[in-house]
Length: 324
Image (cartoon, rainbow, N blue to C red; front, side, top):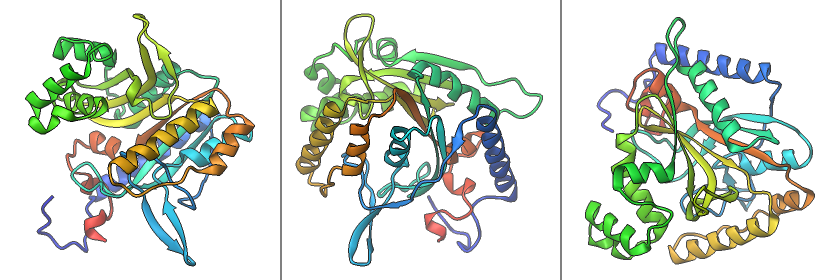
């Protein structure tokens, strides 16, 4: 991003500020009508996530290390384990190393959880909410398209990502990138292919991609598709090609959760990244019992970008990192 103007000025126009206020008002009305409770959780915590692909911002509090939270997920799941029922959070989240036309290190996140729902029920609610937030009065709602991750690859690449061997994926990644991809991981190869070959060709409107590869399961449950192949019960949502949300049928098995955290730590070591200890209070909450639920996180700044047909996140924020 180039900034030649005076950076004391806000990036967002008055129109953008008004539209943000309207969006937040509609959002709270949507959940009030559905009896989903708004909760407030800490932005600052003693622990952080282990995910190798997300970097948290460390701070020092009275000589002790703390972290600005990358999402409210762990705190919200502790509430769910304590019997909160359906809940949502609307507020700030923070991630290091994410600055660009679509990223700001501080951003507005909406995250919510539905008890005893599956991922497909939640996909429907996500699409309903996005249409309410974006569609102007007297306008037709955006088209909603659902497709599996596997089908996307078959349509655009001609092969099944769940059944493809690593050599096939690396070969495709090398063709799209460079020879350095010849020894990359399965996950990284799939990410590259999806971002360069599939994402740009997604239909317009709201597009929901579901049933991701097992290697990209994160905190989602593992199931099997109609071919008997293991898939993660995870979905991502795009609006006119821009990713705005990531959801899961949430993993509730504590042994599997701990194993995934331990795998994350090993991946961080291999990648030369700073270590993150497993959040023991979160583990204790899982021991208490996380109810069956589906959850999703939505980047509201990106939703506002699409509502206003704006291409740079700076223009929907009062003061992006470059203006602080």
